[in-house]
Amino acid sequence: MTTRIVDSADVATSASVGDGTSVWHLAQVREDAVLGEGCVIGRGAYVGTGVRMGDHCKVQNYALVYEPAELGRGVFVGPAAVLTNDTFPRAVNPDGSLKSADDWESVGVTIGEGASIGARAVCVAPLRVGAWATVAAGAVVTKDVPDHALVVGVPARQVGWVGHAGRPLEPTGAPGEWRCPQEGTTYRESDGGLRRAETDGGQR
Image (cartoon, rainbow, N blue to C red):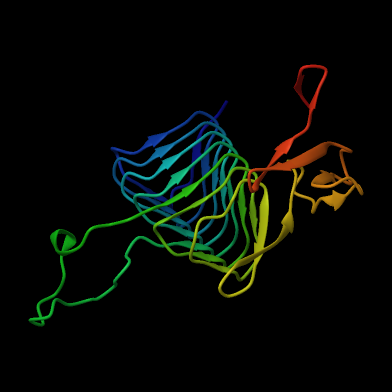
């Protein structure tokens, strides 16, 4: 696989960029960031110091991924989405002096495998977005999102479930059972979460 870093991108020498990853125009990847294989960092996107990203992630144009965010494999971060890192943001200390890196403690957003963050959504750290969950465009997420949950609005609230294909799941009529309209895969609610239904002793 060929790694592509265009001339106008700013990638720190200490950053690790996996095979087959593309970093496009005006994007910035900071010191000690780790990008997996086959990732795409879009135009004008920002990846903060020490951010860790699994294989096959997409960070779309002008998205801002601030440290110490961690993205699992196959995560999608939509255009102009923001993963924050400061619970109590201020430019200055109470005495009026400019804040430095030593004057605050960064907190991060963790995103599970296969999850998607919609365009212009904001994830307010610290929180976790579960595996295969979907955050709708423009949502403001202020608390943890369960695996497979679909959340919308300001503040974000859960309105349904999504499967691995990203489509909203449909009820089958059986209590707590849902089906993907694209793949036909069945999911079942358990302990406040959702899992693929087992079949023939394995996972579908």
